[in-house]
Length: 249
Image 1 (spheres, rainbow, N blue to C red):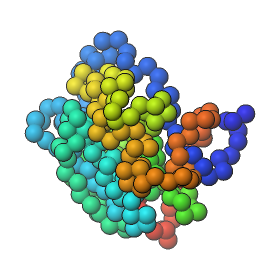
Image 2: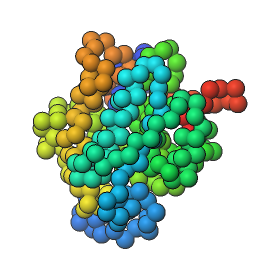
Image 3: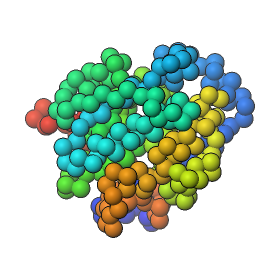
Image 4: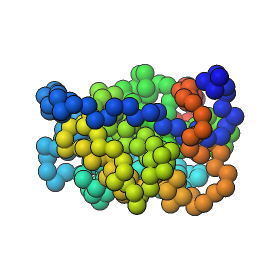
């Protein structure tokens, strides 16, 4: 079956099925009653005039991957602030800058884009990773995702859902111009019902985001959206050793 075949290095961008993202109204009440007062989502709802603080690791090659990370930061800002992609503060970090992970850990930033996912950060470092949005084409197993604090499961889920929404939009033929076709989502409370629509209204689907930064390419390798096969195994994780170059958290 397709579940048991090995991906040959093409079309690794994949969206898990969305499932039921509009449960009964009780779901909204349950969200409001949750004890997540320290969550980024609750802070955005509670503190008017605040912005989304997004860290971005500057990727040397390809440089376009950095601008894609910035675009995804703005996708998240749009989702958080009713379509306002300018409600954001972007902080950039060098590729080998350990301060990036410290900034995420001490809450100086809300999320970090552009880092290589690695096993140590997930298990030992207190970070969670989103669905990957870019795979390196340099023969390595490096792939790039958003890192969030593991103790903020609510916001980690939100970030992952918005990344997935851009891929889902591509799979079902929704574009920036037709973003109103995206489903409403009540999983994160009534303040974020339009989050998926707002995210696509700003950045469009995955292909639109990719082409905005890389231009049109006939062969994108692993950065093609996989819309013609079944579920995939978890993408390979990078297990760092003390001698590795640390480019993620």
